[in-house]
Length: 240
Image 1: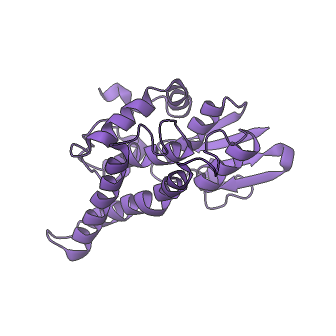
Image 2: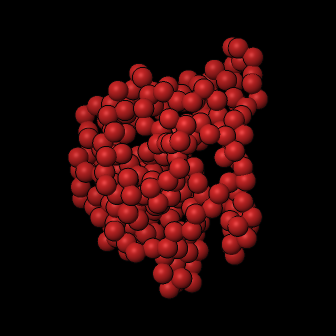
């Protein structure tokens, strides 16, 4: 049995979407933040003392995994026949690899850096903040340029590279950085295309039914941390 431990409003939404795209049977265990950090229910899982999410179990193989990229590859190749990745002979294979790893290696890392710097509230013009902001916009420009000539990140077909990346351009902005995407029209078009996929919609309804998907240009004016985590309401559909 495949068991996915999903932490609400987190990057583990990637794996819920992956499993839905592959139409695989799985058990979803949803954990609620308390109100910002991982709850004890997630930290108490054997092999996950740090409370990381996603946390994945393959009970048939007596195996557990964290790190969303590793889980994504494991499920896609072991149970999905690799169909959410192009073959090495495909002309888009190198771009698939590039953007699959760009998601966490560059984009998510830059989002997180800006998130933590914003929490420190540096003074206007602080060189570290300016450098981090510039790096973040460069990352979005790379995505925008790629998507200006391709429907998805690895060509005309959705792949695991898209699944890995969408969280960073959408839900992560609840946490930070609160970046406005108005200058990245091709990223916004791609986000719309991804969000209209039935598998994505099923994933969000199963994993985060209360959350208002953050798929437009505007981001909240304050982070989840500043707002009090899950105790706030600005992330909820009911706040519309």
